[in-house]
Amino acid sequence: MKIVVLDGYCLNPGDLSWQALLEFGEIEVYDRTPAAEAEARARGAALVLTNKTPLPGNVLERLPDLKYIGVLATGYNIVDVAAAARLGITVTNIPTYGTASVAQFVFALLLELCHNVKLHADAVRAGEWSNSPDWSFWKSPLMELAGKTMGIVGFGRIGRAVGRIADAMGMRVIANDTYQGDTPGWEGFRWAAIEELLRESDVVSLHSPLFPETQGMINARTLAWMKPSAFLINTSRGGLIVDGDLADALNAGRLAGAGLDVLSVEPPQASNPLLSARNCLVTPHIAWATHEARGRLMELAIQNISGFLSGNPGNVIK
Image (cartoon, rainbow, N blue to C red; front, side, top):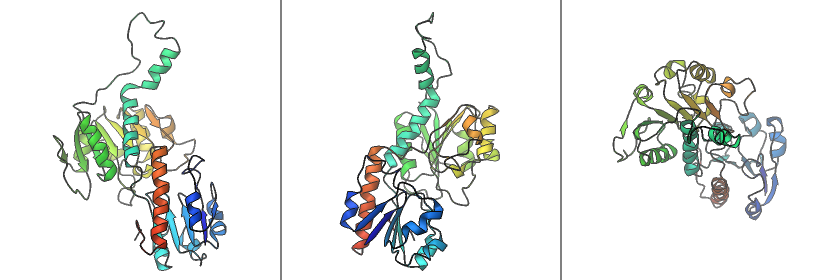
């Protein structure tokens, strides 16, 4: 049985192993696959693994041997799931591997916005402390999180993990989700409509999936609801934000800062206004990429394949 990995590099740049796939059959691993080459590389494969290489319906129709697509991520919009179902191709994803890592990264971004650690460490290295007449100095405002309000938009696994950390830091947590589920017992927690959440929060952290109804949900109108002193964090999907509107709000001082690990187009064009916006931290989609999280992702990908081959597939997209 032929197995093809279309774009394995980001998951495994060399510090993990594809060895476990060999028990299922012959494997071909490509670091990256241009969309135009996906069909040729997947031809003859019964199982294909992809992360960001698109598999649209017209490609799937020309791959008669294909029985299974394993998406090496939580989001699966790169696969035409309806076409796959029509063609009898099982599609799975991996929804739970990165919860702790992404929640941790939310606070890496937030704490950098609060304290500008790198700015101050660079100042010390440059000799500014040695040459200072005072025993302490700071080059930017510093912000304490205890007592502030964290608004979480999208309260699934990652959103709740972020909420637990915020609560432990003494923040009040409010949340918005179409499906509320169990209400946490944190002091001061409550559910809020989106406008109420944006108006009240000192920090807003986005954890919504990208659907037509959430596309561009953070835009000029909704940004105007936020406090000028607030921070916006996005480790979910770049398309939740209208890039130009956020850049305008930051540059005009209508928002204090933003920490973004995702953008609407990745990699971004050099002209993306957020890359040069005032007090805007942009990181290259790395919240998911700790060694621990990638190791879990690899293990779960193997489990998904094993389940499919044994007739008991898990994490099936329907």
